[in-house]
Structure formats: C-alpha cells, structure tokens
Length: 296
Image (tube, rainbow, N blue to C red; front, side):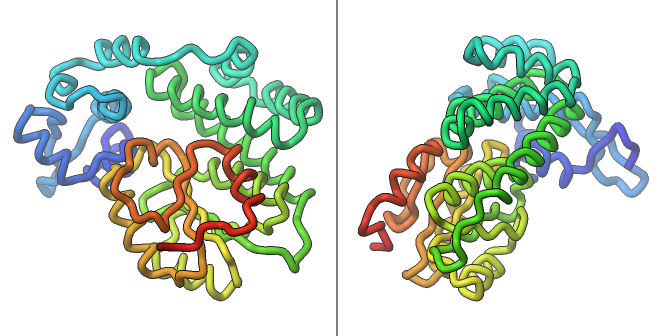
C-alpha cells in the first residue's frame, strides 16, 4: 500500500469506525470512496482518513453520520471547531508549544508544573485537560499527527518517571492496567497508574491492546484485586460495551473491573459490577471506600 493510502483495516484502527460501518457508509452515502489496488483491495487516500476522524468526533457529539458524510474536509473542520470548547487560558501556552513542535520547552514547562502543583493536582488540572485539548486540536486539523505523537511521547516519559519514584510497598493491593484489543492509546493508563500509586495501590502495566484472556491471566497470576481499562473515543462504543461485558464474565468475581476514559461517555446498560470513572479524582475517592464494590 502506498504511504499516502490506507487499507480499510488501517482506516478502522485510526478512526475507531468499524470496517462493517465503513462498508455500509460506502453503499449508503457514497463515502468513504476507496480506490482499488492491484488485487482489488480498498485503498483510501489520506484526506478521507482525516475526514473520517472528524466525522467520528462529531458523531460522538450527537450529529448523525448521514449529514456529515456529505461535507468536505474544510466544512468538517469548521463544524468541529464550532463544537469545541476553548482550553483554559493557562493551558493555551502549552498547546501552542505542541503546535509548534517545541518538545524541549514543553517538557520543561510540564516538569515545572509538576513540581509546583504536586502529582494529584498536576494530573487533574493540567494533564487531563491538556491531553483532551491536544486530541481536539488533532481532530480539527490544527496540529498534525507528528505533533500529537511527539506530545504523547513527552507526556508518557514524564509520567513514567513520576511513577517510578512512587512505587507502593509490594505488600499492598495491585491493579493491572491495560486497554481493550484495538485501543492503541495508553496515556490514560499512566495517568490512572499515578493516581493508584499515590493511593497505595501498585500498578501493573503490561502494555496496551491485551487480549481479554490474557487480561484475566495477568490479573490472576499477578494477584491483582483490580483490573483497570482505559477507553478513548476512537473505539466504537458498541465494541467497547461488548468487550467489557465479556471481560467481566471472564474475571473472577473477587477482581474489580474499573473503566475510564472518553470512550465510556454514553455507555449504558452495563452490569453494575463494571465500575465507570468519569474523571481521575474518582479513583482516589474509590480507594478510600472501606467496602469497595465487588460485584452484583
């Protein structure tokens, strides 16, 4: 596949829109409209990938796909900008450093804020809203993929360094943190790991996209009392719900299942034994509960 074209599998991974949905839209709306490769496989140009990213974002805000499929890239970007909320004023300089690719300056600013604010405040008031703002800027085309990836690398390095300096005692509770198959974004895991470590829970981080059976095996062999799953808005909500329900059934009842991230917005009808967190601060509060929820 040429570097400026994407397969339908790559398109699904990059946008969080399933291959079946992409095929249905092609028949129903005439978009996305692939070219055909040497072996008649679908090949999508980069501009359609950018359009689909924006369509996914706008769908998550409640706009129907039929309306969005008729818009070109510029129209989608304008609509996305209308839907967005401006980042807090104190984050604007950091977002500008991301957009300009000034990675060294960004790292120095983040390190300074971490020292000033402390871990909890830094995660809740700086990292969480900044990560969200960078995601919105990427979706809207104000920063490129390279800028977003470099930002993620800088933030990951800083959080990993923070985490290495606050490992709880080995006799404390443990939590295995990962993402569902198909979810490539791991920043949320590091944020949750820092909050858990601060609360006296040792995080176990095997990486992203762990198969469900391996999540269960890891949680049991590592003697974890919690499995934490991070879900971004890139994944299909139905896929997230289906996999979470299956994971809950596979896990022993004694292991709690905690789930957070923007991909959980709008999830309904999940078992009560799956605990949804809408923000980082709720992790600390949950750890203070003497009789944490363990199932139905």
